[in-house]
Image (cartoon, rainbow over all chains, first blue to last red; front, side, top):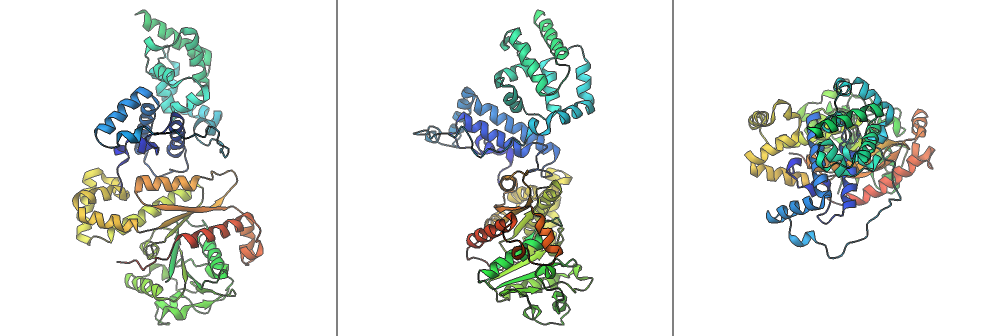
Length: 219
Length: 306
């Protein structure tokens, strides 16, 4: 009856106010993931697979735009220009305190932590596409991204588990070689990433990734 | 002013009859004259829950005109202030209640002189169930935290939604609408009333406004039953959030009821759970729920049938 999900603005998608802090945005995105994740009981059977994929993609886009200060400014200015919200809504007079620690915190019931190692491994061994990628000699960031999507693990989850910054994770997945950190750091990141997704043997795969990268750079 | 609370939820075994009998008893105890009607046509159980094992009259007598006014089919229960229209000896074909009989029933229910009338509906989403649910604006959905039950409650909500939209159109108009919807968003889209409503918005803006107003006047509630310790306690709120965001229907989350083995024991012993085990978690939840609900629905409650 209301607007279609795709027509909502990013703040509405994540159910936050225009003056939300980064922490609130992150919290809202995690809450949304809990609701829309394919394993979530809340939205079970509510969406078709296609609809769910679309919603998750939109949420991810909303999250990445808002969490990135510069992009958020651009987006906000666009919203102000089209009159969706006014300029003073954006700049609050006084920031309220934000709860950093949630005392009533529930155990995280979504994503990686929930379905744990065993289920991820089972998914990996059943998925033809993942095995095919892993058996290749060359593995790029885009391949890693594909595997992650096949496993339905949000990039935010990896960020939480590994504490690697979202920018770095995105650069790795998008193969932005010029922005990547020094090789010694990068190798550590890749290993953490692989462990997080239960992709073994970690050393083998990370070596393949590193050698692929150096070959690309030489060209 | 009569308050009618239909309780439904799509899936069987989620505790509809249990909830009706418990809430009914709590309302009766607080001095409200309360009537329970077993509209789980063809699978009636409510009489057992309120300790009327051998009801003399039943709903079927009214349908078959053996009893002329519905008021006469009312039975007393062992509990003061609590009354029952049983479905125990209903005819075996009662599940297929014809349209005119159904309308007559809904009209008669509204005329009954009670403060609270609780309707115990059956599983599934047959037209009869949907129409009884829509007889009041205060329908209560009940589900358990299991995928099967959640799937069914979503189906049930969508069926209610669609049924309500359907009331606004004649058969021919609706056929035309159906066709437009499938052109607009593919064949399977008809299972999603949210797609239909977006077409209605474009094609019949004046009807869209009416439907929107209509839905805003509803005050649905959701109850999550059989919540175990390890279950997600905010599940109910999240369900309501999804419904609001994607279906545009306001459903208030009324509360959780804890899973309790004692419920099973009480039913097997055929005694009232609240009396037999008054100090269990589930009994506390029920009392809390009753307190919240009788305050929140307010006074407005009108028969709501087109």
